[in-house]
Amino acid sequence: MIPESFIQDLLARVDIVDLVDSYVPLKKAGANYSACCPFHNEKTPSFTVSPSKQFYHCFGCGAHGTAIGFVMEYQGLGFVDAIKDLAGRAGMVVPESEGGQARQENGGQLRALVEIMARAAQYYKEQLKRSPKAIEYCKKRGLTGEIAARYGMGYAPDGWQNLQAVFPDYNADALKAAGLVIENEAGRRYDRFRDRLMIPIINQKGEIIAFGGRVIDQGEPKYLNSPETPLFEKGRELFGLPQARQALRETNTAIVTEGYMDVIALAQNGVGNALATLGTATTPTHVQKLLRQVDRIVFCFDGDNAGRKAAWRALENALEALADNKQIGFVFLPAEHDPDSFIRAHGKAAFDREITQATPLSDVLLRELANRCDLTSAEGKAKLIYEAKPLLHKLPTPLLRLQLVKRLAEASGFDQREVERLCELKSYTPPPPPKAKRTAPSLTRNLLRIVLHKPALAAELPLALLPDTPERPALTRLHALVSAQPGNASYAILREQLRGLPEEQMIETSASELLALPFDESEAETEFRDTLNKLQEGDTKRQFEALQTKAQQFGVAGLSAEEKQLYIQLLTARNRGPEQR
Image (tube, rainbow, N blue to C red):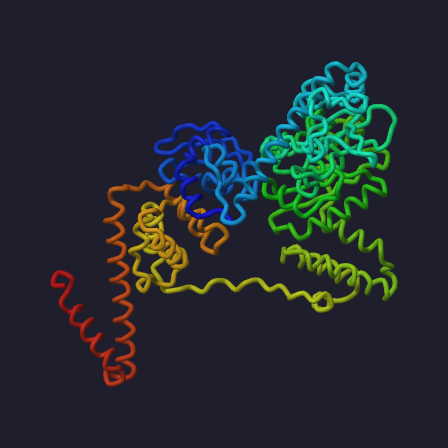
C-alpha cells in the first residue's frame, strides 16, 4: 500500500508537461500544449496537455489521465510501478505502510542484481566484437550491426569461468542469485552461459533482468534462458517489449512469437511490433500487459504440432483478459517455417498479409473443439458443449460469448437457450434504454465543469438540491472527496482517487470540455453561485407544480399541514413577482 499523501505529493512535484515532453515533443497551443497522440496513429494533433490542471486528453482516441496514467499507458506499467518510476524521476523514495524496512532492504538487493546484470551484458558485448565465430554466425543469420546494437546482443565465450574476469569475487552469492553461475553437487562454480550468442532480456524500465543464450554450433539445448530470479519472472516478462513500444503504438497490434530470434529476425526485416514469451506458455499476465497497449494481439506460431499446442495454451490463457473492444488472432505458418525463416524466404509483404488475415480467436476455439469431437454422433455433440463450458466461463466479454453460444448451438443441434442452460450461463439481454427524465442536465453538466475547474467549490455543493441527472453521482463523489481533504484538492489528485470508480468516465468527459471550451477563471465562483440559484429556482418550481397538482386533484384539504404551509409560501412568492422577492 502506498500512502495517499505520498501520491498527492508526487503529483504536486511532477510537471506533466515536462514528463510528456520527454517522450513526445509538445508544442504550445494557447494555454495548453499539443502533439500527435502517442496512443494511436494520427497525422493531425488531437492530444492536449493542460499545465494548469495537470492532465492530458486525446480528442481522437479518448486517452485521458494524469502523470501517473501517462506512464502506465505509455510504458505499459501497473499503477505501483508507475508510481515508483515517477518517484525515481522526482528524487522521491516511495514509502510503504507495512514491512517497509524489509522491502527497502529487498530493493537494495534488487538494485545490486541489476548492476551485476549490466556489467555482465557489457562484457558479453565486448566479447562479440572479438569473436570471428560469433560475428560470422550473426552474418549468416542476416543480422546487421545495427540490429545487434538495438537488442544489446553479445557473446559468452567457451570456457568454464570467464565471468571471473569481470567479477573478481566469483564466489559471491549475488552472482548465483542473478542466475549467471551454477554450482554443481561438489560445490564447484561455473558460468551458466558458454559459447552462446547472448540476448539481454530488458524490463519496461530498461533494466537487464535476464539473458537468453542461443547455441552457435551444434548443441543442446538450442536456447538457454536465465532461471527465475528475484529480477526475472518468466510468466510476467515479454522479450522485445521496450524495443517494440513505438511500433506497437503505430500499428495498434502486437505479434507474439515463440522465440527471441524470431523477434530479432522480424525486426531486421522491418516488423518492429513483435515480441516473444520466454521459455513458458503465454500467461494471462502477458495478455493483460499487451492489451493495455494495443487493441489487437496476433499469436504467430510454427505450423507444426508443437506450434498448435502452444497456440491452444495461449488461447486458453487469453480468454479471461479479453474485452469486447479487443481482438486476438492466430497465424499458423507452414510446417517447415518459423517466423524467422518465413520472412527471410517470402519477405515482409507476405508476412504482413499473414498477420492481416490472422484467424480470429473464436474460429480457432471452435475449430479445435470440433476436431476433438465427432459431430456426427449425439455423444460427440454433447462432448462439444462439455468441452466448451469451462472456456465460456473464462470469457468476461458478453458480446463475444453470445456469438460463441450461437455458433455452438448451430454445431451441436441444441438451441441457444439450451446451450446457455447446459453451460450454466446467464442469458444476455441488452440493458434497457435510459428513461427520459424531466431534469435540467445542462445546469448540472455546467456545474460539474465548474467544479472540475475549481475543485474547492465541490465542498459547497448542496446535495439535496441536485436533480437526478447523469452528472449527480459524479458531483456527489467529488463533494465527498473534496470535503475529506479541504484546501488540498486539484483535478490531478481527484482523478487518481477516482481510478476504477463508476464516476470515472463521466468526470473524464467533463474534464476534457475544460480544454475545448473557453473558461474565465475569475468568473468561476460567480458562475457557480448563479448555477446554484437556477437549480434552486427549478427545484422551487417543481415543488409548487407538484403541490398545485395535488391540491387540484384532492382539494386543499388533501394537503398535509406542512404541505399547506409550503404551498401558501410558494404561492405568495409567485404572486409577488421576481422584483419583489
